Amino acid sequence: MRSDRLENYKKLEGLRNSKLLVYVTSDRQNAETNIGADILAPFVNHLDTIGDVDKISLLIYSNGGSTLAGWSLVNLIRSFCKDFEVIIPFRCQSTATLISLGANRIIMTKQGTLGPIDPSTNGLMNPQVNINGQNIRVPVSVEHVNGYLEMAKDDFGVNSETELKDIYLKLTDHIHPLSLGNVYKSKAQIKMLAEKLLKYHTIEQENVPKVISFLCSESGSHDYTIYRKEAKEELGLNIEKPDDELYSTIKAIYQDIESELELRNPYNPNVLLAISNPCQYSLRRALIESVDSGADVFISEGTLSKQNLPNGQTATQDKRIFEGWRHEN
Image (tube, rainbow, N blue to C red; front, side, top):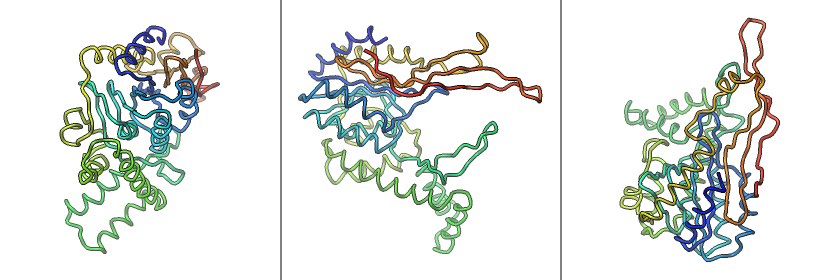
């Protein structure tokens, strides 16, 4: 719990001679949470308490989310400090990687990872699939669209303009042209944001396009993990390896948060209903913390119940009564 890790927060601030912000989004199975624009208001409150300082450290764990929210967060934090660094205890993927590009340096543990920043788009024109009777819109990935077109050219020898046009039109049978246009726009946007943020790293200007290209497409998969050796030696990012004392402090903070958010324990409503039917639940799914401004926790609360259907089967009903950020002192 926060009270248990507060001393480690203060210790980390002393080791880094900075003010600490902690931001974690849950990747707990069935209770995942993404980076979104809703984080900006609680971050403002923490930063107003911190005030203008020389240095801010952001300890972040996330699988990603909205690229514009990440861009806004970097600019918000940098407006309160001269020196901004990111600390990565473990996963720092997609938009979280984009945030790291906006830091002066990245402190990575041996298990810390960055990842590709190529975006997926989600809109009203995206294709739908039916899952358990519900129509769910499927994100359209930039890398998947590019992969489809590259496969046609490289593996099947499609090179003429007429053939490529037919291939593209075939794609529009399954993905609306406006969704494809959104993919192109998102790709151009994230490249522009990455180029702006990379100015804070000590990368030779002529190598910036190579780094952006790798992070946006050439890594081959959005699941590709970039460890600190590759991040430093091949991409040229300003990576710092923590000493033993700093590493043990970072690890202790992460493990405490991992336990609080139950990141290793999949959320399964049926397990709760086996204990009690109906069953009230409260899921802690993200947190923003600092030493002097308490904690803001993203929480989902509701009641689960089993219902008998006319066909003799049972269905789980989730009556959610609250979902959002709560401040805790």
